[in-house]
Image (cartoon, rainbow, N blue to C red; front, side, top):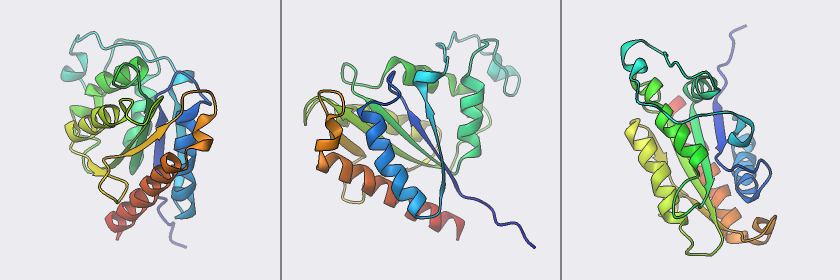
Length: 198
């Protein structure tokens, strides 16, 4: 019997809190991906050690080479193995968290072989006010996708990505607009995955 190839999505929670509001938005998107039959795995940067790039350029000289002994290569390999990558971050001073930026910078490792090219990427962000920097944070994630020549999914209604409002712990549960945008992003990502596999 012929083995059916599984479509995989990786979600990355860039928050230093494993179970915060960003995680709530990712869960809404993940639910739609699973509903479409897509296998989903989540990586929370709260639980991994990813240190800043030191610009030693070892990865330019040898494939998958980096002298920093941390979790970056393990997470980056999960990204390479996935068909789609959804990345969420809370707004920290108008942009992504330091943890997520460190991962972006260390992605110079798979960049050398264009190993993320043509994968589908989707961005999510959560801030303390409706115009609290979410769009700038989402844009920063999208720039990461574009740098790797990935395809960018939006929410299907013209918004660049999913954006939620949550000022206190668990407040995302009360932001139906934000959760709806996350569900829409999950649905749109699933649609693009289906087309790419056809």
